[in-house]
Length: 609
Image 1: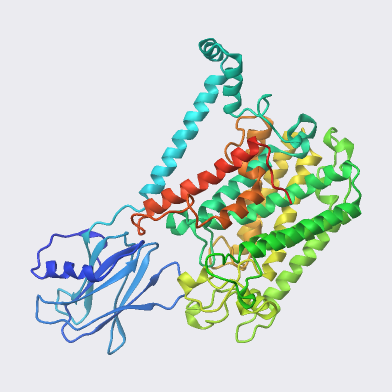
Image 2 (image 1 turned 45 degrees about the vertical axis):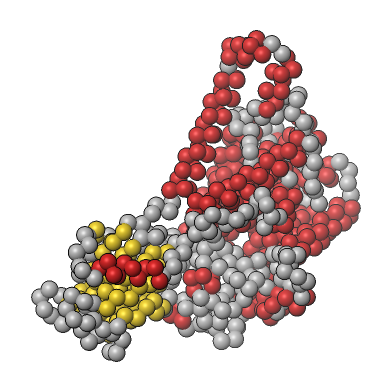
């Protein structure tokens, strides 16, 4: 029998002595104290443990409890257990290796629990396990809730002030009270109206260029970048702000694909504008190659930050990375669009008779290339022989899949990186090591996954074409965004069977699986479906504050990586095991980069490659 979460009084004489044992177990963040009370005379216990989200994982030895003593004086073993997910506990007889009991329970952070193991009340030889809550856990998610409510209150307050400012009577009353036209202009500018004369804007934001630079795209890019900065700085050390160990999605898994998607949209809009200004294709190709080269070089510097650890060995320099992936993706997609570029039909933006699928049909050569690339990814992923691993393996290795393939992390994707780049030139601490205890190196920005990032960027190109082909036709744009969102969502459901681990191709950020691309692209089209009418059509929101980092994305990304360990972006915490203190630090650091982007925007300082 298992009692889950039952609160019981301290009655046994030896219980207080048991509590003293917790002084010998130093609890860290996301841990709870578990006291194993073995009341079975002559039976040594082995306690196995793991999280239930560890798919097909071998349970790991948590602690061993010696045989019980006299009645009323059980042996006690103290151990720390994880609290991030539901835990699986299995108690075995050490000698006979026979399972005595098994339970699943979600422990709370810094809670104190007792697991009482004794014979069943009817005197049978079977064991009963009773879980007791000695001390209630803390609410570790409370700081996130408070931060969200504070942010929501600020948004509501600012929105209310802007609404008041839009009222003519209120505006006149404020103007008379201040009695200064100059001060009134400054206040209007401070409230963020992009159409006011006092708000300095780049050339691209003048009315004549508005169709080629949409504010919703910069807002979306800024949203992704702001979340990326927050999670890269630690995200308060919450598990859902970290990358998933293998299959599935967390908040951290969303942002990089969205950045790639928006890059694809910007490629088409920028290329169209550049070619319309008379730039030759050959000259534009040179710019594309140079920008890609710069992204690669900056990326290699960013992912190898050894300025505080001494000189970096060339034998251990990491080659893949975020900016490197962006550089290669940008080059392939931009060159593809340049080779098959077709001017936007003049009639398409104004006439209702425009063919409903022109934005797709006009890109049929590009689609053939993208389909061919995806075919290469599927062929290599599912048919490339990998030594010591099953063909088509998509798992994490380690203790996953019952420990059968410990060195097969990532299957073909990991094998190709280790073969072409070498073990020491790829990421040494993959997220799979946390849950699946993998030992081999694996890079989530590896070679094979780049193919699917190209696919995602091309889907972003399609979004850009919709915005340009059907400009000033809001309904047509929204219908197409909705159609793409539904189509990609249905593809994701088919590929994953609407499950995390049981599908044909699970959603997986480490592999950049095609289902991961279709799922995140569906989300991206949905976000644009909301942002475009709200930001660009009706002007209900200016995109503040995300718009500002979106306008200076390279600077913010490189800056936040380079200064991550410097004050004021990081400081010594009073309690390093407190989610609250980490959350405050990470939110402050993220807000500082948004502020820096805002200041640079006001001063018209933009770092473009």
